[in-house]
Image (cartoon, rainbow, N blue to C red; front, top):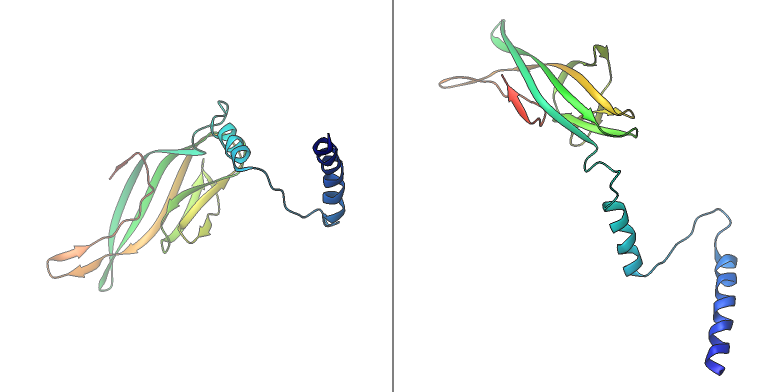
Length: 162
């Protein structure tokens, strides 16, 4: 009986103490048992209405035109790729690696700005749908003993046609 009284006293006084010690600014910590946390993560992971990924990148098509300007060769690279986003929430779709000399980007024919991140250039959207992304950039060919090397940056697509 004494144990029951102690437990009931703790049960009713701990929430009141927690409310008093929480900062007025709305910040604070929430602590739950690890098993409950793992169960919450499983609920999120097993949500049948949630897409397994935020986006998909289909086949990309790359066209390259090499032009000689004075004593160097420069390539004009144009890329078309289908991108599908699955939910009406913000998503970043990585398109090109860092350092790409971007000349322009369009989505469904309209000019867009890309987000620069340490891992490269990404397109952001908050709409679900299928989009035609067009990218254009320039790159200089590098001379070697046996000719020229042209490093091409392409999206991580399902397949790439050149």
